[in-house]
View 1 (tube, helix red, strand yellow):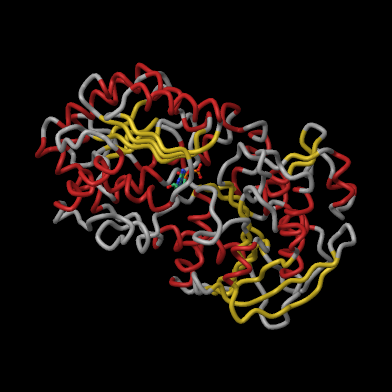
View 2: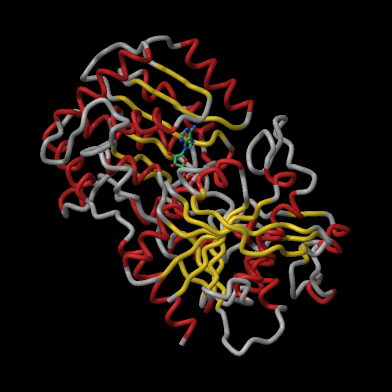
Length: 482
Ligand code: ADP
C-alpha cells in the first residue's frame, strides 16, 4: 500500500506542536505494518537541509502561475523518502512556519499552503512516474486543500483515496474570499457544499468536505466535534459525514520518549528500576533554583501557553499546590498575558515556582523525568501528547476529562484503584474548584507512597506505542482502496 503523507511539520526537523511528533512517527510505524510511506513537505530550510540524495523530480506551475521545483530524496534524520517543495521565497522566513516575528500570519499563507495541497494532488495524478500513491493522507488545515484538488482532478483509471486528519479543529486556515481566485479551484468549490465558511475560504473545511475519509486523533474528540460546543461551526458538516469520520488515538514514539534510553535526561530509569527518577528530580530542582526536596511533589507543565490549554485555571489554583508544600515548573510559550502571569508567579514564589518562557525540546524531556505530576487542564484537547509522555516518565497526568485526555487517563478514584486501572487524576468540570479537588487527590495519593508507586509503575508500563494506531490506519487505507 503506497501512502503519501502530506503535512507542514515533521519532528525533529520542524515542530510547533503535537502535529510534528505524529507526522514524524507515523511513516515509520506504517512502514512497519507493510505500507510504503513517502512524505510531502514544504521546503522550510531545516527540511531541505536534511534531504539527502536530492534531485529535482519536476517543475510544476502553481495555480497562480508561479513555477516551483519539487525535489525528491531521503530525509536523513528520519530515514524516509520525501518530496519537498523547493521555493525559498515562500518558505525561508524568520518566525514560525505560520507567523512572522511579530506573531502575525504571513500575508501569503494561502499560497504557501495551497501549494502543499496542489503538489500533493499532482503526486496523486502521477507526477512521479516511479511511485504512485494509492492513498494521500493529509494533516490539518495546512494540507486541507489536498483533498479538494484531488476531488477536481481529471478522471483517472486508478482511484487514489484521500484521508484528512484533524489535529485541532480550532485552527482552520481562514482567508478572505478574494484569495479563492488564487487557488485554481472551480467556482463551484466556493459554496456551502465546498470550502466556503461564512463567506471566507476555509482550508480546514476543504479537508473535511472533500476527503474520502476524515480521522481525528482520539475517539472522544471525534464525537465532541460533532456537537456545537467543540464543533467550531463545522459540527453540522461533521454530523453529515459521521459515517466517514473516525477517531484513531495518537501514540508515543517510544524510541524518543523512553526514560530507559533517553539521553536528554540526567539519569535513566524504568518502571522496575525507578531510582534514577528521584535523581532527575533533584538535579532539575537544583538547576532551576527550586528547594531540593525529595518529598515535595513537583508538578510540571510543558505546553503552548494558549487559552485552549486551561492554564488560567492553574493560575487560579496555585495555592492548592504551594499551600500543601508542592512545587511547580512551567515550560511554555504563547500568549503574552499568560507568559507574564506565570513569570509573575515565579517572581512571587522563588524556590517553589520556576517558569521558563520558550521552546526547548531537551528541557521538556527533563521536566517529564523530574516531575511527579504532569498538569494538562485543557479546556479542549484533540488528543494531547504530554499526558502520555507523563505516563511514560512516571509523572502522573492530571487532566480535564475531555478529548484524548479522557481516552488516556483514568482517575485514582477508589474504584479505579481497586480495579487496577487508575493511572492519574481526572476532573470533570472545567472549574478551579474541580481542578483544586483533583490536585487534592494527587496529594492524598502522594502521601501513600506504596500506592503512588504502584500507579506510577502501571502508567510507565502501559503500551502507548504506535503499533495499534498504525494498524488502524492501515486497515482504513485498505478499506478505502477496496
Ligand atoms: P499541541 O499540539 O496542542 O501543542 P500536544 O500535547 O499534542 O499539544 O503536543 C505538544 C508537543 O509540543 C509535545 O511534544 C510537547 O512536549 C511539546 N511542547 C509544547 N510546548 C513546548 C515547549 N515550550 N518546549 C518544548 N516542547 C514543547
